[in-house]
Image (cartoon, rainbow, N blue to C red):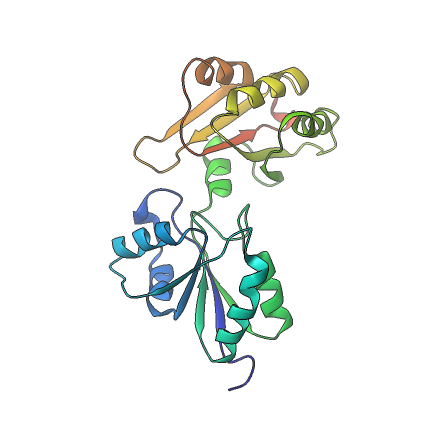
Length: 234
């Protein structure tokens, strides 16, 4: 077989509600010879829910990406259909996969995508902020590096952009407090456990969000959307 016989599929998976799995994405997982998964146990739970069994599921995470490259290339050379997925949402977006995709492209293998849910676009849409210009910061660093990013926002280095980022539930209140101190009391959307059974959508000022989340233990996956400067009241 030629070196570009196989195909790499980038497959989006639900961010919470399993019913959000696309029909096309399910078909690709069903026919894939190998599924690269951030967490093999979570992928097997998803496969079971979709009625898919007896699949070769191989771990691909931030720590083993480089060592997985030879395996992926060898399987593609033999004609394998490989599906790349993450725990939730789209691969590469604050998740592993970029290295594999880049190497496969350099080697001439075909790459295709079956798009699916995304916490970033979902939170931006439900926030009600203008989505024509936004900046995604991924997971924020801790401490002084996070505060440095907030100072850049306050100084207008992201222009009028809406800001989207992920945060740990354990650091949410601390992050919101820094945000209020450095950036100010802008409008903010906080999405917790989006599309899941106990999802919560909070909208208000940063000070309101501190009052809401600072008085109880916060659990689950958090996505924050901060309004751009043009959305502030005078």
